[in-house]
Length: 438
Image (cartoon, rainbow, N blue to C red):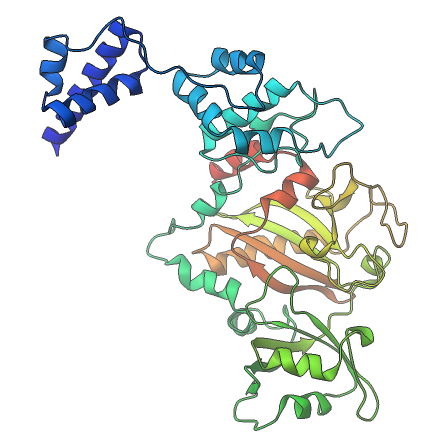
């Protein structure tokens, strides 16, 4: 291994020497050395010692692609190394796709185009990919936000992909974030009453919980007592595949307030795995914000060393009167929560929008200063429960609030930084501080 590294180092030094002698870029010089070896059998030592390179020759001039002016190219060349300048020209299609996209903040002045180009190249140099959320975060706006304050979306996912706590294997815990039946069974064993009661589990048209029940899916619905229930995909995400089931008198069954039929429901149950459980009736203070969806608190905890800490908190709600789902990917809105006070921040946000709104679009309830019930209890609960999932560095807790207290609906192993940083602003500094917190 050491001989291989020594050889690589020698070639590097010789390419650097040739680049200095000729004015070529390092990579052009390295390419010429390799071409001499490949085509003429001349080693790098002889190539340099016999000065087989032509000091007067120049590499092929870079062509400035269409869409980038000569002034913008000169600005990039001045502020980037030669290799990253070439990357900027080579990746012009991707780069200009971000830079020339519409601003999410049209009422605010944007940075000059060349500065936006440089921002994106510096982000790529630091993180290895382009920031597709550059405009959505408002980083294109002049004198507004600093991209160094924003955590890149893969960083904390990588931290959750390796064990940090002795011999604990994270995968066995992360499976509970994927399979809701596993999660509810585990929670029922360690903390009974903190999750909704499981009634049925359907898989590919069969009722597998209760075991050996022998019921059809339609029979299972008919046997439900009168009341409201929630049915969702066992491994689902992003609010997809959710049914609100209202069991009325006689044989009456209403699905999603009448928007779906029994046939639609049974067809979905025949092609997937679903769990049916008690519906969560939320606290009146939370219904006041949005009554037609079960609004959930998303809290993310980080346990990198021996103690868990809260990373961020926000409240998710439906944004339309005809929607019963609070998920942001389904058009829902979300508001940051001040973790120290349990009060909502000023603005509600959406994906693919810029400026937030100060009140809920359906109820008109003002966000700023609105107090979340049971806040101290929730904060204590998530920090203590993280100890039971020690193999996971990061957990996103989705919590509904009832008149009797908080109820945990599910956990996430890869909670969304996009939503968090739209609601709270850049979280890089807080992330760095919590990684070092004991």
